[in-house]
Image 1 (tube, rainbow, N blue to C red):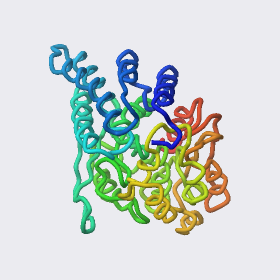
Image 2 (cartoon, rainbow, N blue to C red):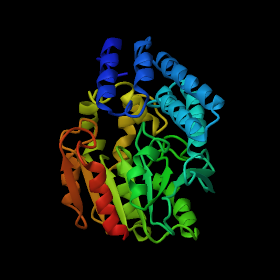
Image 3 (cartoon, rainbow, N blue to C red):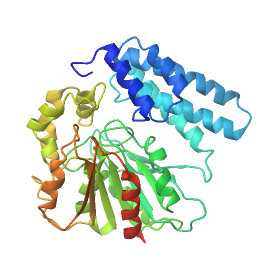
Amino acid sequence: MTETRTLEDGKDWLLQRLEKGIHPVDEVDPEAAREAIEGLGGLDPESWTSAWGAAAERFAASAEAATDPAAEREAWLDAYRFAFLARYPTLNHPLKHEWYDRTRDYFVRARALDDPPLQVVTVPFEGREGEGDQVVFYIARPAGVERPPVVMAWGGIDTWKEEMRSRAEYFLELGFAMLLVDMPGIGQSPVLASRDAERQWTPVFDWLASQDDLDGARVATLGASFGGYWAMKLAYTHNERLRAAVNWGGGIHITFTREWQEKSRNASSYLIDLMAARAAIFGGKTFEDYVARCPELSLLDQGLLDQPSAPILLVNGRHDLQNATDDIYLALEHGDPKAARIFPGGHMGEGPTVPTIGDWLAERLA
């Protein structure tokens, strides 16, 4: 956890976010969430996971007993939302690994009852020794749209492909199919983060190109939080495959310096285990594990910022404490012209962020 948080600080932080509907408690049942927060015995992984997991189990039992499909779907969604909190933000305890398995199970059970139902896709991945041999992702299709364009979306260090489904709702209403996948180093990604981990997306692009019911020629990337980095990187490394890319709150260069990491390691916008979650993408556990590796991600030092790219939109909050908003200004000084929008607020911004991104993508995927 952060070095200055007490249990009471943590409870207050959660209750304030619950009241305002802010991540990570923006979708949970308020009454059940307050009960879980009150019952928190600590901010350590075991205490945290036990409190949220108990709520998830109650909703899962309701889902198992439901006879109406709509009620069953909602109960599984509630079970999933609390299971997500049980495994949040990173898998730094055996209980969290168990709850991540349940998170995926509850999520798929709920989304199988969507209309149209969510599709789970697995494609082979030719990785290196010690890496996985497949990429797992979800396809959510817009109702009544033939051969829709595709937005490939992912989150960051704590918001994984399951959590991106609810964030995809606006884009589905615009007529986009949403391909939800985990960025390197988290969830079911077959690779850890590295200088060339974007290779995990190559078989996904290949799969898209082979689908008759999806328009594989109209594809964009949308990365939220840390995931914005990978969306932007693909605009360079896979630019011939993309119509557009959105970096929504991700780092580019300054964010990956030791100076910034020292400044952001106890960001007040994060409750527990921020550096553990950051380090986990490289297979590490500590602040030092992370700062030893993160500079290799710099798009400036890799020489990509001055290379041709697919159109890029950069979005963030003016006062982001987790990733450096100054990275946007740095990016605008290099390479092809880019679009940018700075919103009020902190990490990822406050206000009409999603409509702004959706409108920009709609123009480029038309």
